[in-house]
Length: 367
Ligand SMILES: CSCC[C@@H](NC(=O)CCC(=O)O)C(=O)O
Ligand SMILES: [Mg+2]
Image (cartoon, rainbow, N blue to C red):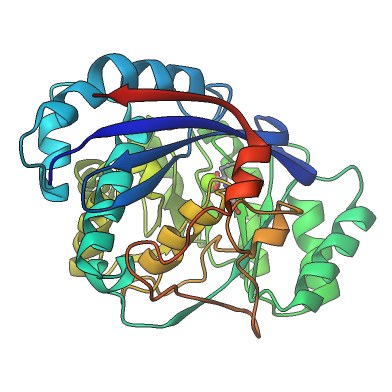
């Protein structure tokens, strides 16, 4: 497939409510959307990098720069580009997994649309719908948290994930467990603790959590392994897993018994599938994490979450969890599940008027 070019587009997506984590508060996503244009079809990619490099080293302005100067040219030069060849062509550029993932996703979407094959079929989906979990931010009071969690449970969400940080951990978890009984419950620290907090984290063992996500720093694999030996609750890694190799190291070191797979974080959906296959071979459960994607990334995530090793509900919420209006037809909850699109490629497309309204900048890279 010969690329005519990439259109880069910044899309402003205000959140329905502030989303607070241990590293900051999100009120609006400034999202980079890439459109791959070829003579046969067009494809859409979404970069999950945030405005500031606080979740990971990448940030959206940096992603635009690295795409414009280093990632798009080798792909545009290819006489006949296959989606499986994108990662290899981009390998000389170190890091920038989120930027690379956006381009690979756009190329893969165009390639699949040209063939009439869905993302789910191509990745190996075995379900036509996936159970939806929801991520709940840090709140001002426990009462406020309980109201928000009750709302999500009323909507039908099948798993609750609570953001935690030092000073907001045991109390909110206890309150949710006491109020809502044996709901599927997990926590995400976004690397806010250190090994010195092991005694506090061990107090979470009493609440039958599915997992504790990324309690320590991104590069603390050995320390996560040590913490895991002190906790009953399974340790799950998110920020640390930037590739299949990192997943293999984490498993070998005993640093993770569960892995949150985020395609943008690992360099794309094909690497995400490799991590799924690796984890399955080691009996490690995986689930699909989220980065507050629009319906474009959400469609691809839901397709990935339908693979057999995704045995835990992911952060594959309805579009309405974050956005009043999505740039694609919204993903909705149906009895706690989200349907896997079955059309060619992503199976969804941006709604032209909404995309135009939300666009803050566009740039053409190509002939
Ligand atoms: C703004 S926080 C983004 C990263 C965070 N993502 C979520 O909590 C889920 C977001 C979603 O539902 O898409 C994580 O560390 O897992
Ligand atoms: Mg996380």
